[in-house]
Image 1: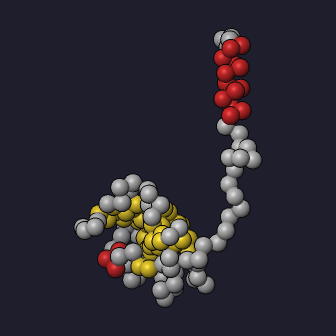
Image 2: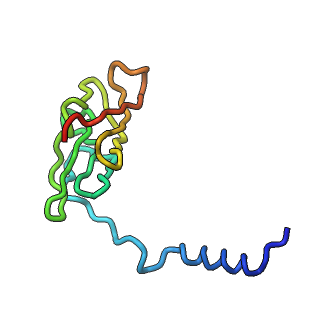
Image 3: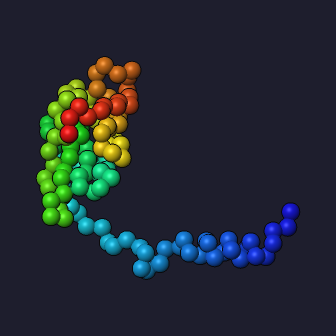
Length: 127
């Protein structure tokens, strides 16, 4: 099969426009004020950027799902997302909110699963 020169030129232009440029790159990363001496990992933003969910082991060394609300452009200190989600005997990780924020999917090695790390889903019961 012979590809027409016009198609090759269009492809080359498309590839060239997807390369990062100085004006489209990221700024140097900066630590957020919500960081503590504990481990904060697996951060995820809500669809509108008003809150961040993440994992922190600040509560007794067990990894729990925490949240930080954005106020005036800055994320605030983390707090427990919801006591119902706490697995007192295991760690949670990889929290992801649905785009509308009405449910969360996460992974946990809590007691009651199939063994090891299992996937959990929880819907919000109130706003």
